[in-house]
Length: 156
Image 1 (tube, rainbow, N blue to C red):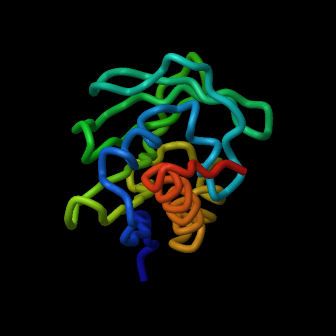
Image 2: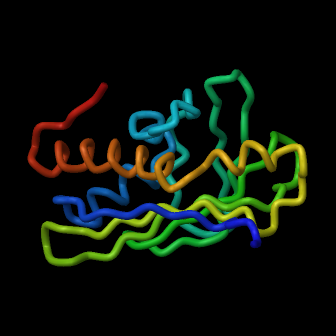
């Protein structure tokens, strides 16, 4: 049996896609909804608007990653490949896709794809990103987005 290298979690969120996307595309907001407590801090002014941009994120372990944006469609899809600062990405991808159901509900899908991961020292960590691990981020993002959409922003 071959190893599953593309894992996703999804759910319907009671918030418009544009509200949710703003929380994903602004790296400074990402630690607020990171369900794996992996993200610590990002500097202001890194809002993603296009493919070929990058943003820098400090991790909770003190390391810093440069995230290279490889997919972007405003309000609908964003994906990036992380890399240690000054190095090339190692092949794994984080992706968020938003599908509006109606004006106030959005299907949110979060995917981790390590099909092309080249750094074997990262395989054990890659395996830890299960559907449940991804769902934790989707849930935290949903709570935050629903709070923003209702006018009562929620922060932890």
